[in-house]
Length: 307
Image 1 (cartoon, helix red, strand yellow):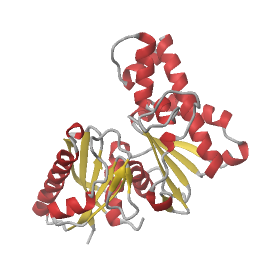
Image 2 (tube, one colour; image 1 turned 180 degrees about the vertical axis):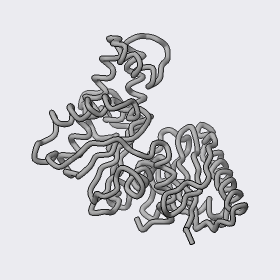
Image 3 (cartoon, one colour; image 1 turned 90 degrees about the horizontal axis):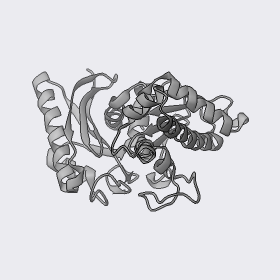
């Protein structure tokens, strides 16, 4: 009989949830607002509602659920139970005993991991990371997240506190980052940074990533400049990781990465210029396959897999 688990992808704006089978099939899914600006208790309430929706579906279909996996912003303890901090997009999301609270509210086994690690696990089990043992998974959105597969297993750093690619320094005399550092990759290469730069160049008031990409294709000078700067910083960050780890594959996901083949052509060009040839010789840079499903699939993999 096919095994099933609940996978939840918690973000700064939404909670995506799914009932996931061991073969990666999503049997049921939905989305709720995360209420991240209201604090930890409101977020926990939304997570509990997501679990309830999945359990309701499973009961109707006679599906036995083995547990709940949650991908969350921030640094998660090594045992997958507590959010230690580092989630700037959720108010009060620090020292939160996430697994304990969900287990107490639902009676189900719960495990958690960083959201970028959830994306990495999802892509490695069911998407663009299949068939390799050493890969880097980069998410480009409001921030820049990173997960890594080393020797076929997720690498999280000592006690699960590492892999914060978004907070390597790419500009030593740069602007302050929300993490407290200066000149971080996330501050210059995220989609939020791209939009912020474009708005600054045009004084247009507001925009989004799709707007910038569309105006780039139209040849608008400000959009071209903003995109070129985005590629420059992101390619430097990815090249740095390649020089350190020489992965077989770099998988890039997030909304901006779905802009089209041109996006990856320019990103690969930038990485080739910056990375050492010997380190990058066997590294391919590819788009993620699972889109916004990756986080929920990977979170379910915390229960269904052995990572």
